[in-house]
Length: 214
Image 1 (cartoon, rainbow, N blue to C red):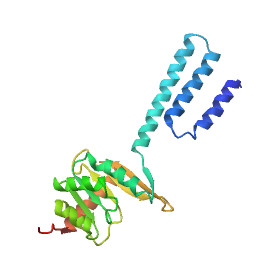
Image 2 (cartoon, rainbow, N blue to C red; image 1 turned 90 degrees about the vertical axis):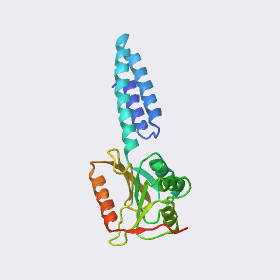
Image 3 (cartoon, rainbow, N blue to C red; image 1 turned 45 degrees about the vertical axis):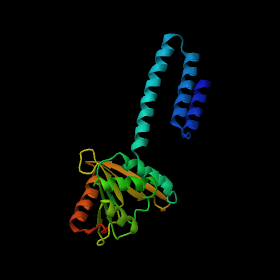
Image 4 (cartoon, rainbow, N blue to C red; image 1 turned 180 degrees about the vertical axis):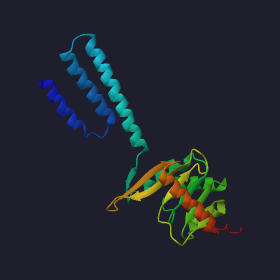
């Protein structure tokens, strides 16, 4: 085997552990180009290099899209990271429907967004019991549904609820419970349909938390 080919294989194996896909991509392109220019002459090397570059770029774009739409993982203690992710999730959406235990992530920027959604009538929250934070949002105009039994274990957040563009973020955990995982689904996915059914049941059977009189 040509020595440069062996170096190429070793380099690829190392690149598998590189976190930054752009660095990996640039490194691969540079290495391929150096090999081609040393083994193939003239325009053939340039054409072959461009072809491989396009293929790798397509693969990198596909990998990025999978990362973008794939599950997001946080340490359980990383409340700030979860808060920031969900804040960005709900910030530019339409109607929001949230199933939560106590809305622990609804602080800081997230709480301000929720208040704004409540004031515009675009916020519905399903929870097992009243809390001060939920009462505050009810006072701001949110629809708070207290659904105690049977309890809803699934935690999720719909955005653009009621539209074709609706999506849902569903909270999960890894096997040992150390990671908080957020999966996202679009209309038509089985998980989307099941969580939507939970919302419909809670709207029918849940107890409305009324705003406090001023």
